[in-house]
Every structure is written in structure tokens, then in C-alpha cells.
Amino acid sequence: MEAKLQLRVQRYGWDAASELYEEGWRGPLAPAQRTLLRVAGIKPGERVIEAACGSGLVTRALAEAVGPAGYVLATDLSQGMVDLTARHSAGCGWVETARRSADDLGEEGGFDAAVCALGLMYVPDPGKAAASMARAVKPGGRVVATVWGERRNCGWAEIFPIVDARVVSEVCPLFFASGAPGSLKRDFERAGLRDIEEHRQSEVPEFADERALLSAMLLGGPVALAVKRFTPTVMAEVEQEFLASVKDHRAADGSYRIPGEFVTVIGRR
Image (cartoon, rainbow, N blue to C red):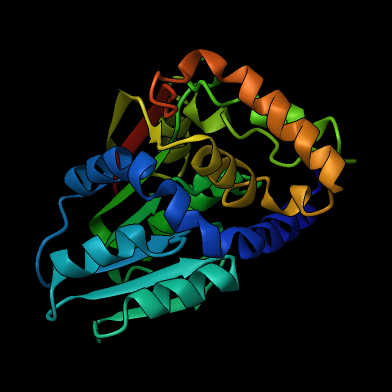
């Protein structure tokens, strides 16, 4: 998919998903977000830029970590997500928001850290985003990003081919590419970062029931724009096909515990 088209799809897709994203993903993504925050080691008084902030789940933790003496600039390609983050950060005068793509943050050396929690899978060129984050930090500053891991380790991955089969263009090309062993680390190396470390973790995200799972996967995630084009009949087909793909992860109480993998990489400028 041509890069400008992919960015446009992602922008409007996340606008469509914005209101349901946090409800669906707050719990499942929490372990990965905690790892990113631990690895980043954000300190009081620091200046932090966040790429692909989404609804502000990590932004709030960053704001608490830097405190009123610090500063957080939270950015996202989706205006819907930027608006949610601004709303959720109301009362923290040291947090600002802006609509910017992760691969073009437009900042030069003013930050102690640049972080991105589960956003680099959506940009056309994750290496370009890593370089943009690297430019934003001071010499010695940290760049930290978390992505989903290998496709074979993510039990919900069939959502993409199931939806792709019913739309003209691939809804999220190369989603798992950055999660391949060493891939994101190489992007950091090419961005000129040093002291690079990769942390890989296995988790089992839990969804309370069928409704919660389908809402997160279809309406509050990366395929939200595509499924808006489905008729009720097609949507029902997609739901049933996806549920069949994860049936082995359904617990006796009706909840779903679906294995996943995350990769967190840190480097210094």
C-alpha cells in the first residue's frame, strides 16, 4: 500500500476506533505498557514526547512520572485520539497534545525521552518513525518503543486475513513485521541510537466475554475503518469466523484468554 494512502487509512481508522479503543484495550495492553514505562525510566522534571499516544493510557502515567516540573507532549495521527488524550489529561497543565504522525514528529533535541506504546506497527516505515523519535531527544536521551511480537505468538492474528478477504486493500500491512526477532532493534541502530536493548515478553490478554472481544478487535482496533463498510450480514460472518479462530482460547466462564507477545526496545542518542 502506498505510504500516503496507508497513513490516511490509519488516520481515519483510528478516528473511527477512538471512542471504543480504551474500553476494549485498557486491560489487555496494561502489561506491555508497564514494561515500556519501566524500561523508559521516566524521572520527575523530565521532558517527554510520546508518539501514537492513542487515548492517553500511557500519557497519564508519563504525566504522573514527570510531575508538574516536567512536560509531556502527546502526539497521534488521529484527531479523535488527540482529543481523547487532551480530555483525559485535563488538569495536568504540563501535558500538551498535537496531531502529528509518528514518522514526522517535527521536534529537534528538546526532550529527555521519546516513547511509543504499540504504535509503530501502523506507520508505513517504522525505521523512519524511530529516526524521528531519535531526533526529538537530546544527546544521551532515551528512545523507547513497544510493538506486538511475532504473528505466530499472537493468538488473535487471524483478524487481519478474515477482514482483508472482504475489503479491496490490506487493512494493516506488515503489522507484525516490527515484532520479528531483531527487527525493531535494527531500526533503532539505523536511526543512530546506541546501547540498544530488546525486551520480549509473553502475556495472555483477557477479554471478559464475546461482546468485549468483538468490540475490541473489530470496532476499537486497527480494522475499525474497514468494518464500517460491512453490511450487517458480512459483519456477522466476520464475527463468527473470527470467534471460530479463537475458540480454543475461550474459558469455561465465557471469557477469552488469548496469548500475545510484546517487544520493547530502548536506545540512547
